[in-house]
Amino acid sequence: MTDTTTATATATKALTKGDIRNIYWRSTTLLGSFNFERMQAMGFCVTMIPAIKRFYPNKDDQAAALERHLEFFNTQPWVASTVVGITAAMEEERARGESIDDATITNVKIGLMGPLAGVGDPIFWGTARPVLAALGASLALTGSIVGPLIFFVGINLIRILTRKYTFALGYDRGTAIVREAGGGQLKKITQIASILGLFVMGALVSKWTSIKFPGVVSTITAADGTKTVTTVQSIFDSLLPGLAALGLTFLCMELLRRKVDALWIILGMFALGILGAWTGWLGL
Image (cartoon, rainbow, N blue to C red):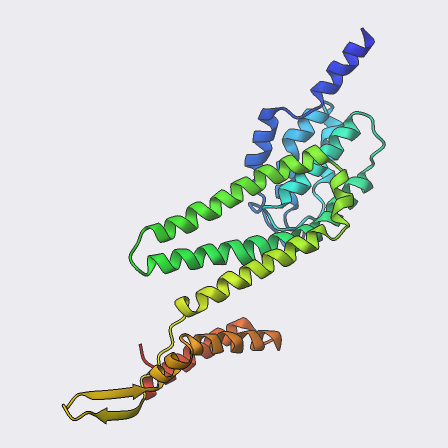
């Protein structure tokens, strides 16, 4: 009888499917109350409310848990679901009587913020978003409505699946994933994502960037009166199509490497384009 009662009490401490759905929808508002003092703390606390209510029936315990999750928190918002899942698992263990104190939960959150941001930022902000935007823009330039749809559907599909499965991973694996995060797995994922992003963006440079040099180098008139005009652009194209775009890309990379502000680079390209069009050595 006692074992059955204990099992039932333990089962009620686990998150239900309804709780998980509620946590998912709340996690989409993680940046809804962003501030420069505690960053995403308010959003994280609101996301944890269904779990806190499930694990702690006592109001005082709920208040203590809410206060615990109002401390500073900031990471890539999509992979933050992993931290939510791990934290929920730790709160569940604590509610069942495990010796997990406030400092342990806080330290796990703080320990995961940096590594996950280091993975999420290059994968989603540095790879998925610009690659999808580039593909969508390329199609949109041809007048196809598929272009913006690719970006909108693609980025939201990635966002939804990432939030859903990273929370499930964090909740199922609990604190075990913290030990794995200390190894080299996150670093390898980051490197793979960065290489893939650079490869795709590099392939799109010649299609995405258009630089024309209309200056005439020579004009040859044949015996039948036909003229062959050689321009600077035709010489570049015979050497390597997209050479100017590639050179501009390397120039921007070098300026960024030298810590030149990206805003100044953009303003410089505006000025260069206007000057080139005015003098005639750049054309459409």
